[in-house]
Image (cartoon, rainbow, N blue to C red):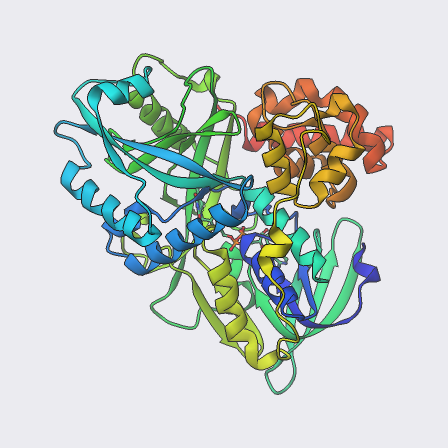
Length: 516
Ligand SMILES: Cc1cc2nc3c(=O)[nH]c(=O)nc-3n(C[C@H](O)[C@H](O)[C@H](O)COP(=O)(O)OP(=O)(O)OC[C@H]3O[C@@H](n4cnc5c(N)ncnc54)[C@H](O)[C@@H]3O)c2cc1C
């Protein structure tokens, strides 16, 4: 599908293809609203591929007294765990308690009781020192008293965005990447009229008309008009993660602990057969419309955290597989420490242009509903209300249909790709149903991405359709010849194009994802 092929008139145009835009697209399309989503770069290019990948209530928001946010998020977590297994999966968390250091046992117990009460199920329990050491033999034991265990959930954030877009497609919702909205023009009445959209790379420009426009551009939410209230400040806060190999720090579950320098909560968690360590929280003063980058101090801070947790390991820069940095779209007061700013979303409407920003990956449905409620005066009434969960339901792959795949791999494909999972398996050569190196990613997923998922550049494929660029040493450079053999024909690229893409991808990786 190309920008030039699309109709000019729409009920609703959504600007931004992160989790918020994708959720609005899905919610609007299921109501029968003719909706087009336009993403200026790639789907999930922004913060939505750079989060901590947690679908969580945010225990720390409880400590800050933000009960409403925690309640919305915990309920969203419970719904997603029940409805999209394989895409959102349970993640046990452990919080070790050390003598003389936060968090205190009583405060944590109270918080966990409230957390479980909201979820309507008890997930937490106390473990003795010996039981914690048994579960995590490589971690430090100095002043260790015991630990609490509770349950949250995790996902692959970029795949979650792509899944929502795919599901919206089943209701007729359309999404196009590399289509940047340059301007939103208004009638003399002030009402939103036309959008000028450009695909800079191929030099196409189009105008579209829509009854309503929802601006879901995350940290760039202010680009089509200022925030309406003087006390609201869009405060971009940068957060970085390290990805380290599981062989260096094998973790059966997530561990949350206080950083030794400033006592902020940090974590190390298993993700895609590697370990994700995060995160920092700093005012982001780089250009908002370009790739965010971690600085040396952030990398040192995260290494200090992990070496404090696992003091015997002496984990250094050379052990890091990749770095991932995102910018939180926080609407706050601007006068608090970054981690104390509210993660609540805000929505405002201005004559047909609704802006939604802030919030969490976890609460995407709530953001979408609130944005659509604000856009209702300019939208046609819902002509139908089909179930989001039917469209998002996991696919089904029998053991006989994919004899080479074990149950976790079948669950993964079914959850991430829905009905397309079976198609992927049936179209794959038996060898492509094996994982790439030591990751959980199957070769068939690369082929599926290349064939079906609007891949324009190799970075789209390596960093967002699959996450090999974060999970393999040197961004997966050694695997590129095999990836080329499989994907180049499916992408329809000639040799010169592949070489250009490969050089651009590796240069990108060295600049933004390489440690040190
Ligand atoms: C370090 C970090 C960790 C986090 N961890 C978690 C977590 O574990 N769990 C959780 O629930 N939340 C987490 N969050 C928060 C969550 O990631 C964000 O709230 C969420 O991803 C924001 O999504 P969005 O769609 O609003 O913005 P984005 O994902 O940034 O999407 C906005 C999109 O708009 C596009 N765009 C901008 N301008 C235009 C234009 N003119 N035309 C077309 N497109 C345009 C951009 O290219 C971008 O893709 C984390 C955030 C960070 C930074």
